[in-house]
Length: 320
Image (cartoon, rainbow, N blue to C red; front, side):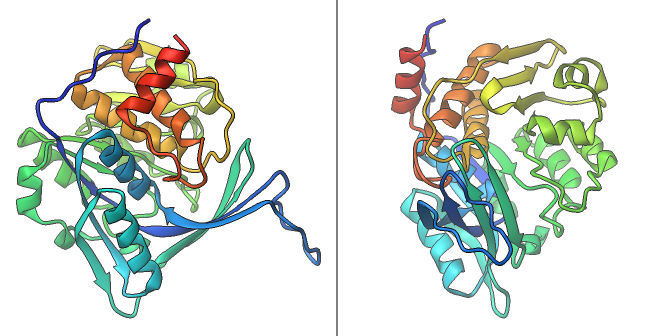
């Protein structure tokens, strides 16, 4: 299959309403801490974190006009987050700085194969509808958010917002992230799926929300009524996509030598969103998103190697 030709008449305006935090990444072949022991690791970085922010940066790198809506603390980490977003082409005019609040921090222990995370929430749950300008949403073509389970302030409000946007012709997407409370809010997710154009969980997250033996069983018969597509990230095994008519497509991952897997799923999210706005569907949409995720693993941190149309085309052409 040849890579598709890419074109949009103009840069789509995408609003990302999400969490912001820094990632402190410890990397190497053995990064597991041990009590009363000291280890040396190969790498250490402080970079922009959060699922929503990494997706926003990847969307901007692909060519979208991205406006980020969030809250941070009025501190050095908050300024670091907004500076990094702006450096990567994301508009931060609608990021609110809250005095007396600390910006969130995630410690990432990363190996070439996988990663583990420890997060201090700080400002992450503080986004509420009052911080999302109505006039901005009127201009948008698409709205995305990440980390459903961490954004406590918005969780009761996403459904109403998505319904309103859908009525106005604005498409929507979200990624759940991991539920640290292990509750999974199946009812809330199910209700939101009835007003969502793109649902983008990982395999493990999907199987926690809708228990089943495998992804295919959920996509074929285990979902509540859904308004749009469901794209499931399956790591090195590729990704699956349930289309509007209920058919399920799968596409293999691209073979690369990863440096750091941090942010690969978030760049996949950007690929699904941007590919969807390009009009891609089925296996072509999955392959585009998989290529975005693969490019992400070639640098340190979620934004160390952002996908572009050129790099996506290159990796797809090389492995056709």
